[in-house]
Image 1 (cartoon, helix red, strand yellow):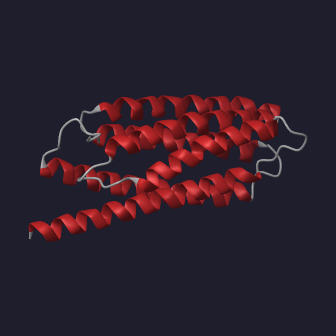
Image 2 (cartoon, rainbow, N blue to C red):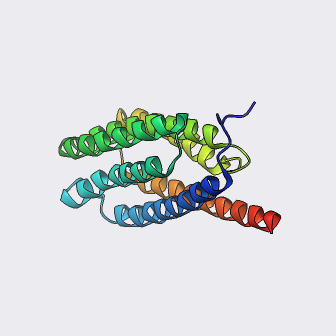
Image 3 (tube, one colour):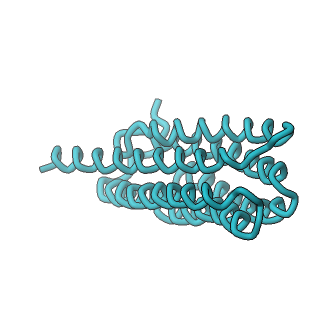
Length: 196
């Protein structure tokens, strides 16, 4: 059974692929840059660390907005819109949690990662098909985000909570986004060679 309600027109599908390719590539590069910056700035939950913590879900919120605008009408659009709102709220919550230290930050980041990962899984499942491919990097990334978010909340209740893992989280997310962009590029090339 197909997860898409209707097959998009060829030109619309090509536009969606191109838009998603640019979006995923940009999102992946930003995640890697954020991970590098946060790795050197989180020893203390100070102004620089809080700024970076707020910035990460805002990157996701802007990406969701761009994704929503480029996605044709379909069930995944509502999930993308939900994720954009969720990420905006997470940015605000992380700014507030930063004043409380490491444990509150881990709780908020973990809750956001869990729910956002579930949303990413839903979008990946809905986008599977002949035009956009199997979406396995998106599905893996969403599944890992869901699971890792739970572990962050468990870690936050422990004796020695740490923000070290957030750079690893962002690095993994960046790599999966870039892989999804590369697969979309490969899919576009294959489809172009079939039609020529």
